[in-house]
Length: 281
Image (cartoon, rainbow, N blue to C red; front, side, top):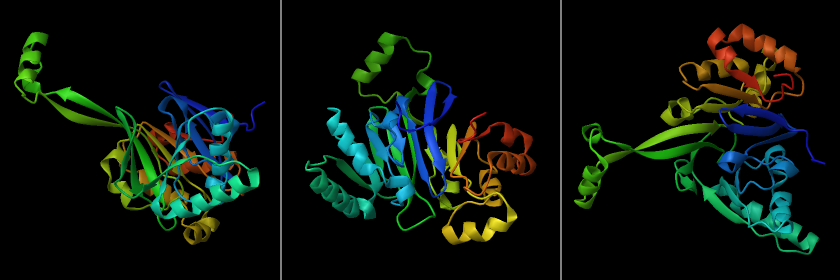
């Protein structure tokens, strides 16, 4: 029996499995891309995903890291790759050492310290790019980008043998193209990442909107979280086809959040926005 009752969202062949409630747990996996954004309390359904992308070290986002890595070993899987802010590497090593001592078994892991602008190749044509967010020291967001080579316009009419001939002559006939598939902001206020083209044009944007009522603006400011007014301002001008909202406050009901969003977003924005925890979506 699965350990979690995860929400499921299907978008153009991608399945997003996740759970996100502010202060409780946040984790979202995309099996087809082999990536998991944050780990929450390590749902069994997501242990098989090989690449864990941590945004920061708060417990509701990272508490399950030792179980995730240990259970992969138990199941005979290769060590998980953990992309994590550079300043969290040593504390994570200490956590894994302590749990390994308690458990009586070494917990294998491939820890990769990330800074804004760093990239990690998930697959030959798929990379994760990190960018700075505005939550706590070193916090990051990630965009998963598909890379392709596109034929230059002047060579589009050529036949196969002609293209092969040019390649043998070391003629550059194509150029690299990036297709941002999904961006995950993690916990953050609006920050400089709104100027990043790959964030604004990512097909899927996964963004927190923790607070939706006016009385909670102060709470948002104090915790470096997103209030709905800032969220609306942030996505203005973005070209995302789908927006998934995470990290809603425990003080807010889904129905209440949907009502506020419908009032504050344009019709076009509202129709492409989904609350992750809306079981009736």
